[in-house]
Length: 144
Image 1 (tube, rainbow, N blue to C red):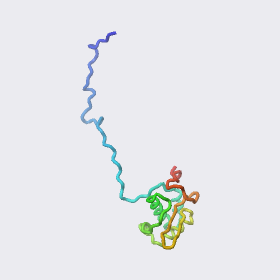
Image 2: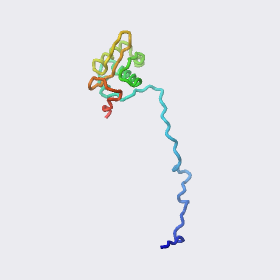
Image 3: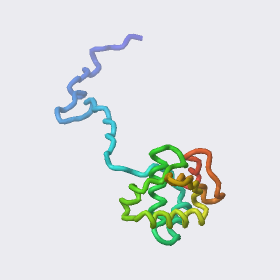
């Protein structure tokens, strides 16, 4: 079976050339890493039920709770020292901070260790059980 090559249509290379305005085949630049923002941020997950419970308390409890979560994110630990300088950014006086801490403690959202002459040592608790979780990210089921 011989095939006659002379009777076939010639292969037209020009039909496969890309036009000059076509972007097909151009290499893409690799995605740039996002730069870290110098702006402070909250590191989560923060359990929604914790925020709801803190939001229903009197005074500045929610604001102080957010300060505690900020510190927990920075330290990668649920147990942190309460810094009054951070609370001052929310316009909270030292006495206001102590009242808010008392409210959060009575609600079972935090536990506090008080030592004379030292800052408060606060542990953020699991809002459903009132106990300390094993790690910072143990409450991811609240995000589902």
